[in-house]
Length: 186
Image (cartoon, rainbow, N blue to C red; front, side, top):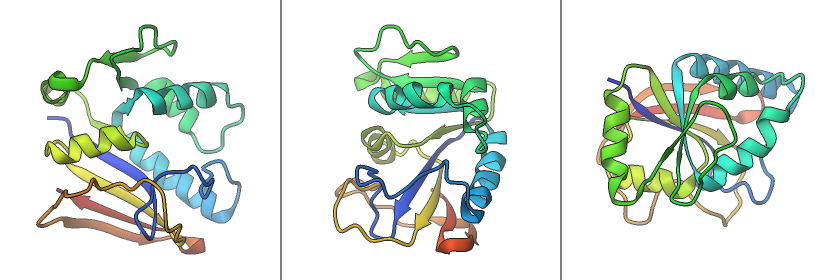
């Protein structure tokens, strides 16, 4: 059975919204290389990428056009099956993309995906979709790359009113520059 994994870059105060440009995955620094290495390890454990339409369109306009991508994200996204939840997208324009209708059908669509052969399906970005999956109890693991920054505003990972009584810590790792990775099973 496949798992749904949410992987997010997050600030100390829980913001995942990158509107203030606090995060750059393409940075060629020691920390950037360390994060790229662990991201590649995680990517090797997945064959599905799940996003909402807005995040999909942002990623589609950026990643396929990268040359000499040191992060490996371009290769990964071109390789995996992409699932985009949208009621309006008709032509994904990116090979290997399947459109999910979402809405009332989302839970059954996600359950069907987890029953298919394969490995992890990872959601990154897509704040609204992530919140919906958390509320519906459809997330199996959280992978949080916490950056030592406090923004004081912005959209957050966890939806208002959502509670998890017990998260099982699977891993905690520190990187140069102060970023930490924490993985939790739900």
